Length: 220
Image (cartoon, rainbow, N blue to C red; front, side, top):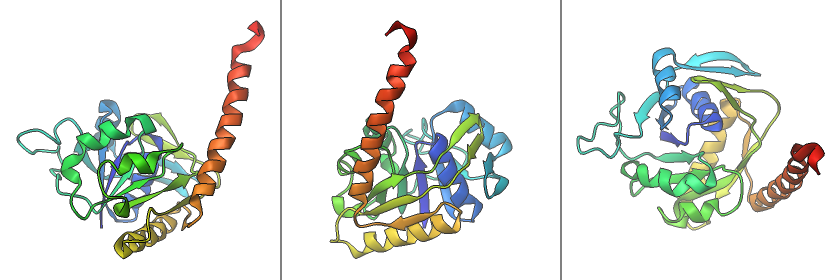
């Protein structure tokens, strides 16, 4: 199964690196020049509860993916993916997937574990809803410097096929959960994941409000 990660910040680095470490066919579509150059030069350095490691995932240059030459970078991989995992901010999803169009084929499934609401609808602008897997993750991750990602603490990723109409998508969701779990990223298929998404939104709204007030400091 060919996997491409779009939005290679902290979570994209964590998920892509963990799957690559287990030998999966993973490519990272990276826009950040410094992060991309560091990974190319030294590999992706990962500091995890399960141990420290360095992995060397395939890299796709975002700038050249749509070039007339068809050269997508040193990996030279512009073929459609089986799974594209989107880890951009919600507002950047449309632009990121527009730039990744050569990787979206008639059998490609799009995956969103992004924060917030409406991510499934944004993916549906690019593929039928029957080819979407969506959910959320509680995985913590930080890019501490270019080419370095850290993740510490318990977490769980939960997702489901957006519809029950396509058995291939449902099977790929189940397979995705299996390979994540084997890569030390606990994951399950959860048919009630919308409740989890709304719960996370409510928590973030409450916490963000408090953080905003505190950050305003003595001037209140």
